[in-house]
Image (cartoon, rainbow, N blue to C red; front, side, top):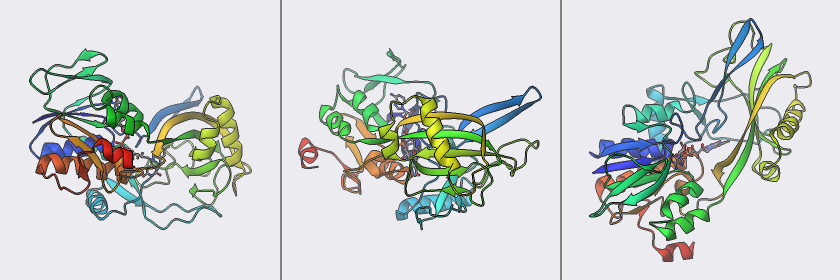
Amino acid sequence: MHIAVVGAGLAGVTAARALHEGGHAVQLFDKSRGVGGRMSTRRTSWTPDAQREHALAFDHGAPSFTATDPAFAGFIQDAATFGWVAPWAPRMAPASRAETATRWVANPDMPALCRRLAGELPLHRSATVTGLARVAGGGWQVLVDQVAHPGTFDRVVLAMPPAQAAALLQAHAPTWAMAAREVAMTPCWTVMAVFHQAAPEWDAAAPSTGPIAWAARQGSQPGRDAPDNDDNTATASDTQNWVIQASAAWSAQHLEDDAATVSAALLQAFQALPGLAAAEVQWQTSHRWRYSVPRNAPWAGECTAWTDDALGLGVCGDWLGGVGVEGAWLSAQALADAWCDADPAAPGHCHPSPAMFEAA
Ligand SMILES: Cc1cc2nc3c(=O)[nH]c(=O)nc-3n(C[C@H](O)[C@H](O)[C@H](O)COP(=O)(O)OP(=O)(O)OC[C@H]3O[C@@H](n4cnc5c(N)ncnc54)[C@H](O)[C@@H]3O)c2cc1C
């Protein structure tokens, strides 16, 4: 079958890779310039004076992930043997939330895992899918920026956050669209900053109170350039790059605040963490994620991917598979297993009916 996969985050590339290996001809579409979606690294530069320009990289989406499901853990162990991912055990700040599971990061940046999985699969970048059109006799045309992409597809996979999926589902599967709209995503304000004299004796903080949920020293993750993605004019104890992420509650409360106000509040909270009294901000920018992680995943485990074989439509993503990177992978695998094995009883795979959504 010819299958269009819309969205090249982890769910999209995982589904595309598995469908390709199952013998299908796959094409990926993503509105961004690259793959990775919310497994994202911001690359930019800072020019402190006319002589120096520092390249900067910040893992400003998912900073790391855990692997608890046996199938995902097996995949991650395999990926680690190829050097695609690595475990990360940051030194945690005093009074951080206790965490026991191993943290993993993609290597050498967060989108790298998606780049590896996408490999040489056909990928249409900067291609915003604005609609799907049924073709007489069956199949689909994909509309990119309102224009029909050449060729037709037997099936389409939507691998994107629920609000974006709902917009494309509305005309063809209104019950699914309605159910997708019910899934709330939490926002996350994120500040990326370069500090002078910010060298506490820890690499990451997960405060249990206050506006900050997570802060991490960039470059403390395995595989990143040292010191701190910086050139050799600065040492790790001199200039340090940090990502600071606000809690879901704080981000929701300040969602429409201007970026300057948000940055000031989060930087002040960061400088109040142990060992950072002398930290001086040299450069900073911020990003507002409207959709960071699903607040809930009501169908995880039971209906981890949605498929309608007659219509030729499938949906996957973290909001179906469970919260986070692991959920995105599990959802995509369930979809691909169903379409490769054609086994209606495949775990996690189901044909959701309106009754199921009413029950949820
Ligand atoms: C700030 C932040 C912190 C996070 N922290 C963690 C964490 O600690 N642990 C963890 O496990 N997870 C975390 N996550 C969540 C994790 O990143 C996601 O669960 C996972 O990456 C979702 O993958 P996905 O493929 O389902 O969706 P996405 O990564 O969102 O991919 C969807 C893709 O679809 C594309 N797209 C959307 N609409 C269209 C369209 N119309 N046409 C074409 N392309 C389209 C987008 O460009 C995107 O590339 C975090 C995320 C954020 C943002």
